[in-house]
Image (cartoon, rainbow, N blue to C red; front, side, top):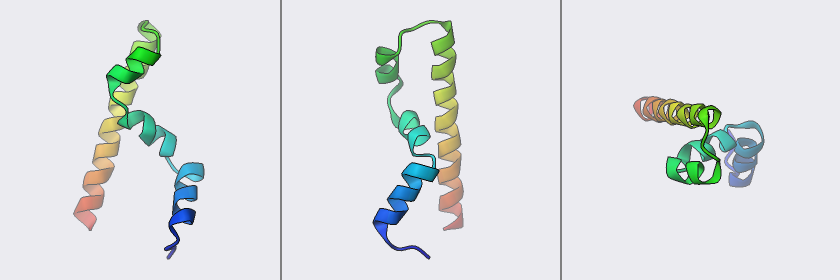
Length: 66
């Protein structure tokens, strides 16, 4: 069991899903403002919505087990 917060954070950033979670947590309006809008990027924004749902599913599973 690891209880050092720094080691946990480094593991999450380097080996975990930090960047995916970061993108999923941004409001879509912010992402749409930064990324130019075209058909390809609209698909990307749709995938970010899917990532949010997957993240929500992980959180629900975690809450049920704990």
